[in-house]
Length: 124
Image (cartoon, rainbow, N blue to C red; front, side, top):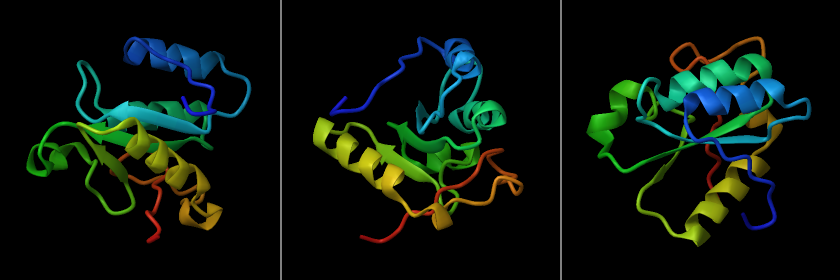
């Protein structure tokens, strides 16, 4: 994907296995908000246990009202609405990855609603 190494997972169990086995940093988790068996925020929380450095970008085709109870609309969460173009995905990935480290909550203070470190969207 546009110069990035992509580790593709078939489902949440596969994503957890990939993250668990990965010895090098995991820079970004791109996850749907609503998935079978586990929500995106729950997956991000689990992955942050082994990769606290991972930033998170959620995507969803549901209206905001339908996903608000999944924690994906909380302040500081990056969300890309479906459908999206490859260019808009690349732009959002770059934005999330280039956010100032100060925009990421300290490791020892996870976001209780998500179980993962929140990313603050910086105005550009």
